[in-house]
Image (tube, rainbow over all chains, first blue to last red; front, side, top):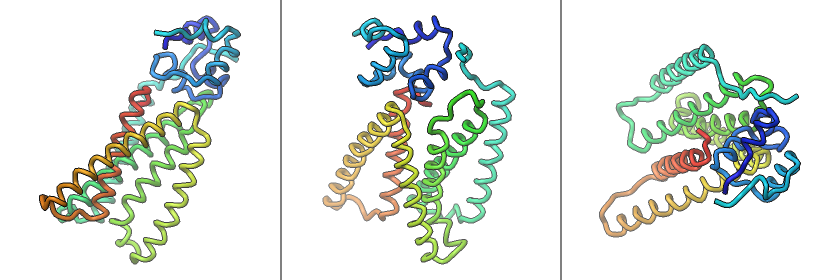
Length: 63
Length: 194
């Protein structure tokens, strides 16, 4: 699965640590999400969508 | 509140950290080597010793990373991970090294207590971990179970066929821990945790 997490984070000038704090996960998890090493659960995907105020489908897409 | 600066350790801090770890490694090596007759070690004790050293070293590295991390970076489960690793290292080392310090009964009672403490620390780690760390733990367990089961089957079959002699429970545990550490490394690296 692809995602636009890194782009969205950069647009807001947030660090990985800051985004991790907002999502309630570790910085390593944010890094793994951004590099495509980990696909989030549905609850975390919804949380990401809420944090960026965007629909899930505009953040995540199929390969 | 927000910042685009992601934490990276400076080179002087990295060098100081490496020097610190080298000193700790030398100290641990001296202490362990001084208390154990390394030349007379059986293969199972040698393997257990290597595993114990790896666990202790990993625990010290994790503790150092947490300690050197700026306050702005959330520590996550780093402290608990370090505690679990250090306790696991002590648990592996104590049956070999403990008799130098106390009688076997006392060492065993200490091991029982430490096992309970380590189990509680593991449980706390699971409860506080985020979903990716839990996923890594689950994948590690599954991979280690599969590999251990295969290793046990092959050994049991060889023994049944009269092709190999007996292996002690201590030797089996050392092999199990080796497999577990390898599985943990593979599962962590797949998620970029290295």
